Amino acid sequence: DQQVKQNSPSLSVQEGRISILNCDYTNSMFDYFLWYKKYPAEGPTFLISISSIKDKNEDGRFTVFLNKSAKHLSLHIVPSQPGDSAVYFCAASAKYSGGSNYKLTFGKGTLLTVNP
Amino acid sequence: KAGVTQTPRYLIKTRGQQVTLSCSPISGHRSVSWYQQTPGQGLQFLFEYFSETQRNKGNFPGRFSGRQFSNSRSEMNVSTLELGDSALYLCASRGQTNTGELFFGEGSRLTVL
Figure 1 (cartoon, helix red, strand yellow):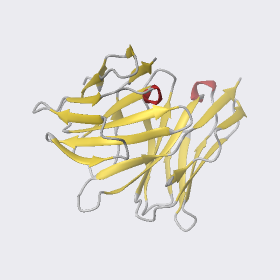
Figure 2 (spheres, each protein chain N blue to C red):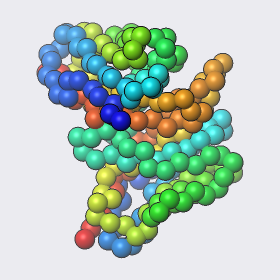
Figure 3 (tube, rainbow over the protein chains, first blue to last red):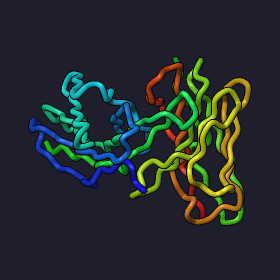
Figure 4 (cartoon, each protein chain N blue to C red):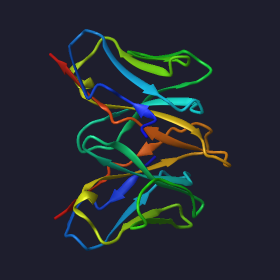
């Protein structure tokens, strides 16, 4: 049962345009959401996050939007640059049952290609 | 501050063998998680250790095991390797935080022939 879904395996955009990566989740217990970027042969690196008490978080060219009622979040990259070409993973965290810490559940990733 | 270090980076094994992967977390981080990444499956949670105790385990068979030492370094072991175990194994550490932000190593690429 896939609790975090990234339905687009790939996305191609032109340099300078906006990239929008989407993510849906099913578990209403998720209360923190993160985006990671991964280049080939490297580990994922944290990009941006958002708490469930917010609906938007911005960091430079990157903005994450959260729509709790729709259980949907999106990552906007404006303007897109060729160096942004990577796999982007959406992740969500919820408390362990009976515990006080968190486990991350990842989507399958979206390969973003930004063309010069 | 050094990042998460994983060894070995690449290894090739044959079916039926076993393998041990090592992870050194960021200094001061006591939580270490392991993830398996395969094409088309994203990152799948294996287990998490905190202060030498396994706190949670993913849906993997018992051939996958791990442990954590008193210095927070962690190892994972896969016994009786199968072709389907070929993957990138990622270790991640986390500091004292209520959020789920993880810091990943570069991974150990395992190929099973």
